Image (cartoon, rainbow, N blue to C red; front, side):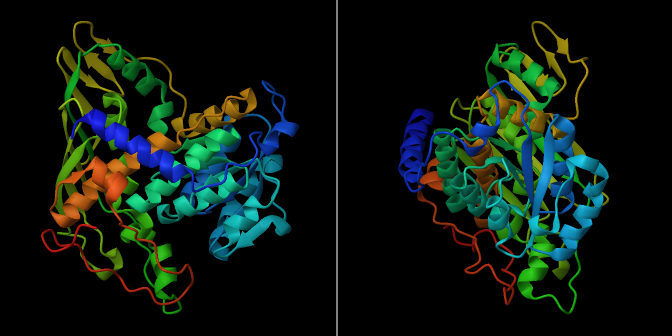
Amino acid sequence: MSGNDTTSRSRRAFLKTSGALAVGAAVAPWASRMHVGGSGEIKVGLIGCGGRGTGAARNCVASSEGVRIVAMGDLFADRLASSKRNLSSLGEAFDVTPDREFVGFDAYEKVMATDVDVVILATPPGFRPLMVEAAVAHGKNVFMEKPVAVDPVGIRRVLAASEVAAKKGLAIVAGTQRRHELNYLEVMRRIHDGAIGEVVAGQCYWNQGFLWVHSRKPEYSDMEWQIRNWLYFTWASGDHICEQHIHNIDVMNWALGGPPVRAMGMGGRQVRTAPVCGHIFDHFAVEFEYPNGAIVQSMCRQIDGTKGRVGEHLVGTKGQANPGRWIKGAKDFRFRGKRRDPYVQEHADLIASIRSGNPLNEGRRVAESTLTAIMGRMSAYTGKEITWDFALNESKLDLSPSRHEFGPLPTPKVAMPGKTPLV
């Protein structure tokens, strides 16, 4: 199938799916409190109070004047309490009273039922489709961490919710912070202007050592342990090709103007095999083919004692580029400007877009990059070639637990290429 055919079918599927959500009012609820082009106060609710959520709340406050954290929600009371202690140093910008602290599987709904203007979604990625749908239904602007789903069914939900957000005039910004870094923006602008000609190949990497684990305690149910140890369960994290390597894959999609048409990958669980590491892989290598025929080699690994490498490289018909640093072509270029913390800048761009009345909506592009990573994982798990059309329009893969409640939840078997079925 050609790239144009794939794009056409993808759009048809997207438009069909988007009808599943009610559109609602075109004017966002924060509009009455905010002057276009002004600096009215923006109230923020934090959903997911782990390290990344707490950091995102700090970044949001640091990004712009007139931002306050006024509500918090998490599944676990200890995580919320820890985050609250951390954020209390923000002074007046942190104003969460006990009646705006929510714990449990429905905490996200309770945060969204308050008068917050923006919600930060920083729970494990498996919960993201459910929560972005709810945020849009409640008329809330969204900052959501990447990845935004762990399976094709979840991606369709995010795409549909993003379309409804656009119709409601709500902003959605994702935690793919390279899209907000001045160095990437400047180099990528030159690439798109033809500085290295047509991009025909690329490589991207996230190779590093072991990450954290959360050991099981006797009082934990299966569900509680898997959520606390969420990195190591595909239903919660998407595996590290999605949870972490998506940053580099997103840069490849950015450079090439959209997602690939197919993926062929391999990987395995060679070193990180202890039960505490769930059932995910510890390394992947994937070949992505893009509509113009460009081939991108993707590699990620989380194994101690190995050489680290994180970055991207592009090859064009007239030169080469490191999309965050330099260009070597007919006219060489190296970025030497000052850079603002991209984790702060992404929130600054979100807040500025809300206040300007021109809300950013990054929902589609981050969903596409997430699905690209999911394709790589699906191929590595099954040993099959995965096409974009199949992943977006045909795959029935839904990794969600049947119920969100504490109790039994067996650890899935480790995927075996050639034996694990393609769904």
